[in-house]
Length: 187
Image 1 (cartoon, rainbow, N blue to C red):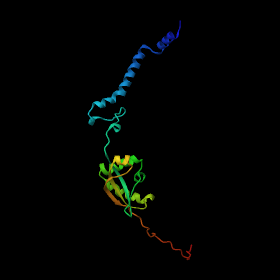
Image 2 (spheres, rainbow, N blue to C red):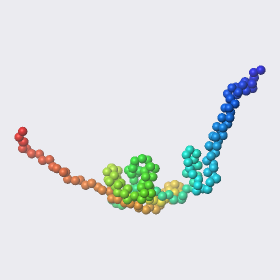
Image 3 (cartoon, rainbow, N blue to C red):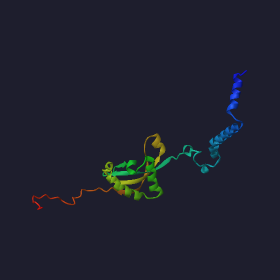
Image 4 (cartoon, helix red, strand yellow):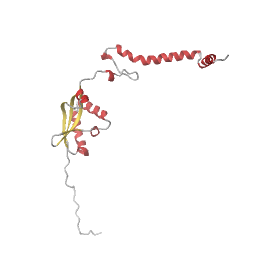
C-alpha cells in the first residue's frame, strides 16, 4: 500500500519541519517586498523621486531627455587656424567619460577653464601627436541631439571658455663647446 501518493507525503514531511515552513514563507514575503519596494517611487512627485542603491528607481532610463546637450571639450588650433578636437588620452588619464567629467568639473563647476588651458598647453607641446598645434581652446558646445544622433551631423553653437598658446621650444645653442687640441698635457 505504499503507492506514489503515500511515498510523496512521507517525503514531504521528512523535508519540512513545522517551523521551517514559517521561515520559508517569511523569507518569500520579504523577498517579494524588496522587489516591489521601488514601486513606491511612482507615488512621489517627480521632483522628489530618488535613485538609491541597491533598490534603484533608475531615472536615467525613465527621465525625459533634453533636446540640447552641453559638452565641454578641448580643441587644438593649427597654424592655418583650422581646428582639431583633442583625444581624451591627450587631456588626462582615465577613460573618455572620466576625462569628460573632469574637464566639465574644472571648466564649469569650479570655473577654472583658463588655469586648465594654461596647464594643458605645455603638456601638448611635449606630446608627439600635437606637434602641429599652436594654440589650445577649452570650448563649451551646445548640440541638438536629434541632429547628432538621427542625422549623424554634429552641428551646434560653441563658446570659447579659455585659450592658451602652446609653447614651442626652439633649438638652443649648446651650453659648452668641446674643442679638441693636439697639445699634450704633461702627466
